[in-house]
Length: 179
Ligand code: XMP
Image (tube, rainbow, N blue to C red; front, side, top):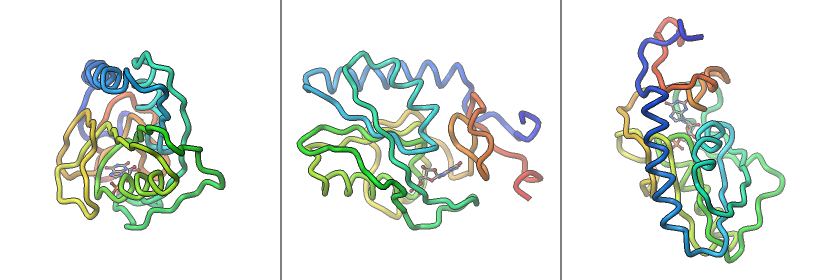
C-alpha cells in the first residue's frame, strides 16, 4: 500500500500532536454543556473520530451519519445524499459534527442544515483537513486540524475508490495509481 504513495503530506506523529490541541479546545469549549452529541460522518471520519474523541474527557454520545458525495472518483459529485434510514435524536441538544475534510463545503453545510431542521440547539463542526480553495457552500469548520492545498489526498480515513483509509498518515497517491 505504501508503494502507491507519492508523498506523505502529514505524518502520523504530527497528526497525533495536533489532535491533543484540538481535543483540549473542544473539552474547554463544551465543558459547561450538560451533554454533547457527536455525529461522525462515515466513512471518512472513522479514524479521526476514534483518535480525537479518546482525547476528549467529556460524557460524549456518539452517533454516525452515512453520507455520500464522491461516488468513487476524485471529484465531489456536488450532491449530498443521506443514506441513513434513522437519523440521531438531536432536539434541543448541542451537536459536534466530525468529518475528514472540508472540500467544497457542501457536506458539512447539508449536515448542519439537517441537524438544525431536526431541532438541534447548536451545531459546531470539526474536520481533520481543510482544503485551501473557494467553497461552493458557505461556512468554514469551527475546528480544523490542518490546512492543505487543493489536491486529492488519502489516508487517515480518506479513501480512493474505497482503499487507503487505514494508512496512518495523510498522503498523495502516485498518478499511475489514479490512472
Ligand atoms: P465536500 O466537498 O462536501 O467534501 O466538502 C467532503 C467529502 O468529500 C470527500 N473528499 C475527499 N476524499 N480525498 C478523499 O479521499 C480528498 O482529497 C477529498 N476531498 C473531499 C470526503 O469524503 C469528504 O467527507
